[in-house]
Image (tube, rainbow, N blue to C red):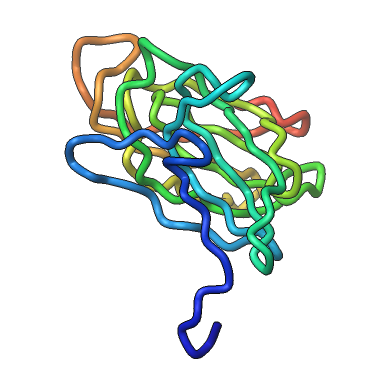
Length: 174
């Protein structure tokens, strides 16, 4: 509340199997409309069992779980904790989406209202520890700019900056 009283809280570790890492890094909560969205690495039961980078959305007024999304892949690509924040925008179809680099070395686009993954573009092995940027060119083309400092997929060097263009069907192009 404005006077500092807790309205609700959720234990991501106890309730959702959030994993911790030796360096204690964790992402911040993002507020999008009436949702509080959390980015974590977790492993739990059932469909949430395999270790993945997941996004969980909660009703920001009540704390009720709204959706969970696992847009990435697991090991051997999932090697890092989740510390970056998503960036929100509208896609070519008018959907409210977010773009994020995740712990499995991909840049993802996720429907911010439903949690449905829209696309994933694998750029590295290991975590992308930066928030992507959205760049719009003079002709209206939109690019998602992402950087990483881990192992590249196609070479033995580490680190790269990429520009990913999402076409009208929502399929990314390098």
